[in-house]
Length: 177
Length: 142
Image (cartoon, rainbow over all chains, first blue to last red; front, side):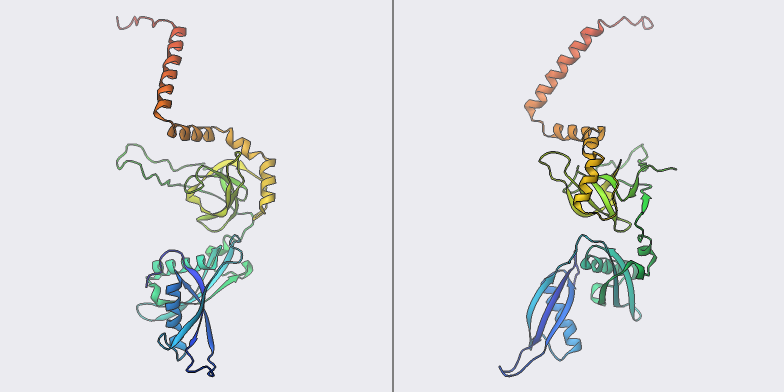
């Protein structure tokens, strides 16, 4: 399963197919981060099967809907609690991200887990994502942006000139005061 | 090494890549090390500005203008601060903007326009040469 592109947040509701009309079957709801609704449904069955006695073959999905960010232009600090399998064991982790949307933060999380821990998407389970107040943030890379008068230059700018020649006699210009 | 242009709330920047290329915006807040939340009112008549969005610093070129706003101000307050400093006028009269516009116009020239340009340049050069007079003979190389 590839978690390509930007992930989206889905709310999936499913249940076991009732044997007859009189049987009352509980509904199960899950919040899933997935690239599209098809993967979201697949992940829903994956998790539900682990927790309840219901499979895709004897169950049905009632509803899948995408959850959109309430304030997509507000910068928020997100805390992501996750569980992942490393090569030697399975561990819990808490990571923090500064982003505009929950799905953006979770996408960053998957990318970071792949980069830093070589964890593949199928090895990662997002346990919980919550907006964290600036006072409650723990990670230094998020804390350093907790400054309303933030100010920094952009030193040593490497400008992406894709048309530049392979060989040149001039050093690139990196100082833009 | 003293820098003059900082990434800060209110810094005006030029978007150098993407769908809003060539447009000017103000940094409203800093998301993280790579991204800023920006918004830019329109500088020219009939042209849209930059809607509020996250843009990477790599796609921004900081300009020597700054407006006085609080972080994450609303669009109206941003526009009034923008107009107070008359950033639109400062930008459209700046050399950088004029050079970018000239480059855009040159790209849109048709072959007939290029012919007209060539003829105008020739006429101008002839007038300049007439004013300067005949070239003096180089005495050193005689």
